[in-house]
Image 1 (cartoon, rainbow, N blue to C red):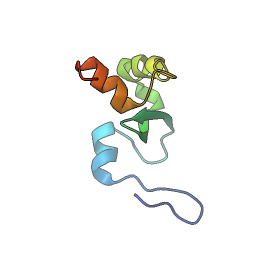
Image 2 (cartoon, rainbow, N blue to C red; image 1 turned 30 degrees about the vertical axis):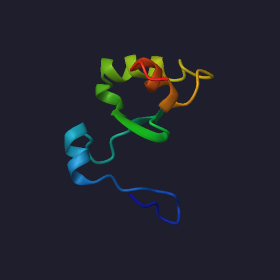
Image 3 (tube, rainbow, N blue to C red; image 1 turned 90 degrees about the vertical axis):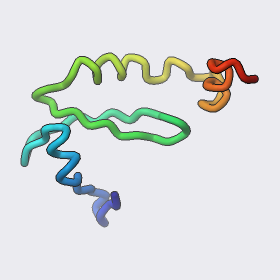
Image 4 (cartoon, rainbow, N blue to C red; image 1 turned 45 degrees about the horizontal axis):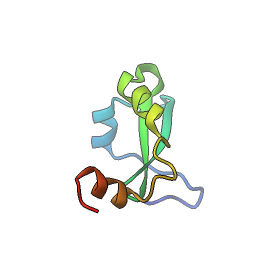
Length: 79
């Protein structure tokens, strides 16, 4: 996705339909770091899922534990 000059984005139809977002519906956004990238997760306010609430509680729990690659290597038994 590309941003406009006003830093706005248009969500693709497939994504809107998959998540259940309707025109003029307010959504909540969550920024999550995953594999060294920042991911923006969307959840319609009207149907905020339990999964989003659970996942947002884990955000930041591994700060100062090393890079994502280091954490995964340790979890997989590779050092």
